[in-house]
Every structure is written in C-alpha cells, then in structure tokens.
Image (cartoon, rainbow, N blue to C red; front, side):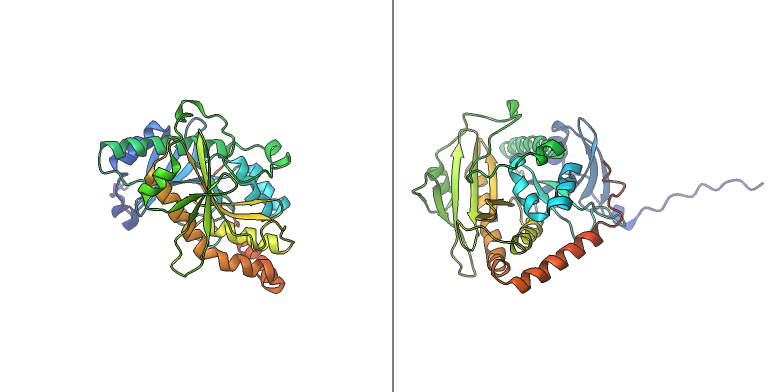
Length: 345
C-alpha cells in the first residue's frame, strides 16, 4: 500500500497578493464586534457581525472601508412585491450609517459566487494618520456597524406598515445608546466655511449650499439639523412638488438605486410619490468640517452623474419602459443562485 503523500497546498495567486487588514482598521472592527475576519482576496475579507454572527463582506477601496451584508428578507420581499420605488422610500426606515444597494451586473463579492439581489452597506473613510484620526475611525466604524446591524434587523411588520412620507430632514433616532452624542450639534455655517463651502440660510429653516458640478449644471443641497444628527440632501425631482407617474417612477428609482452602489455615502430617497426624490447623506453628531465636506462632495457627484438621466426617465415614456425592462432582466439574472456561501440568512 502506497504511503500518502503530503503535498503542500498551492496558495492561490489571489491570496498570495493579499494583505491583512491595516492595524487601525482591524482594531476598529474588533471594537465594533466584527469577528472571524478571513482574507479572500486583495483588499477583500469576510467576517461576521456580532451578536448574531451575520456574514459580511469587507473591502478597502481608495481609503474607504466598505462593509456589506445581505439585506433582511423583509426588504428583499419589499422590492419583489412593490418594486424599486418602495425600496427607495424605505431608506427612511434605516439608520444614518446604512444604505441599500443592488449589485446587479457588478462583480460578485466573493469570486465564483453569485451576489444576493439586495445588500445593506456601510461606507466609512478609513484613512488614519495619527492618534486623533484613529479615534475618529474607531468611532465611525462602531456607529456604522451598529447602524448596519439595525438595518439588517428590519422586520416584515416594519415594511408592511405605511412607510412615513414626512418632510425631508433628520430621521428620528432610535436605539441610539451611548454611541450617539445628543449634544453634538455644532455651528453648521462655521463648519461649512472651514470646509470651503459657501452656505446661506434658506427660507425653510434649511441651510443651502451650491454643489460643485464640473459639467456646469446648477444644484443646491439643503441641510437640516437636530442636536443628534444632520441631513444633507439634493432634490432632483424634475417638477418639484408634483408626483412622478408610473412607469417613470420605477425607472427613476432603479437608476437611483444603481447609482447608490457606485457613489460613496449618498443614498437615495423618495417621498410623496416622487414629488421629492434624489440623494441624501445623514451624519450622526458629533460631526466636523471634514464630514460635511465628504457629504457635500458625494452629493455633488450624485447630482452631476444622475440629474440629466433622472429628468430624461421622468419625461420620456419610451426610454423609461426600455430602462425598466433592462433593469428587471439584470436583477433576475444577477439573482440566479441568490445566496453565496458568504451571504446566507
């Protein structure tokens, strides 16, 4: 009988070029209750979110830490039953540090594995050059991981209840706990000036800021704040105050969801049947000039990349029908197999 031969396992070229998580990021994730971190590729890891051990994918892209997990069944059922407009509107149910994205035809998060159809995502600036930056990173990761857990816990009863369609602005905080500072509402105008943005008070108690747009378009962001958070948003509704009819609303909602997957921080919103729709960034207090700068830069990119398409889809019936059909085909195709070994309920 031949003796078994113990051959060394060949390491995958993908793993050979991989590196461990940077120490400040790994420490911040550990403090936030992220465990079982495993390298699956260059700047890509899998892990589990405490306390329930929900599988998550982690990656670093251009000094951004991205954490994703398969969204709750309730939200997945919501898009199947009520379509993309309901899913965009459902962002009002989510805490500030989480957003919903649809991977669609994008690369899977783990090689040779299909993506889930709907992901909950947290995006965190991860550059940390000194002790103060490390502390800010740790605080951001802890907050965003807590918000991601809450987003993953959305129940069917939450989405079956009428989704609130109140005015745009900071959402009421829930489950805040010690991680949120209810007294951290700084002077917005002073912070915006420090960040290099020209702002002026609006007539509706919101602060208005003109966004940067290299293409020459003009869009203004509005900022409203409470002692516990700030909401920055840009309204892209082609006819403000007028609802968008179907199938135009489904097409626009699909576009906003796709764009949210490629634009940092910005997440879509829609209220009153599309009479208000666009992108928002919510910042828990305390926030600083750097946070406001990142948020306004994200809204600038979102407006520049999608405003023209939003208007076209809202007005051209033939174009929007074609887009909806293409969007539905991509969603079905990307959902084949549905869950990978990493993303399992």
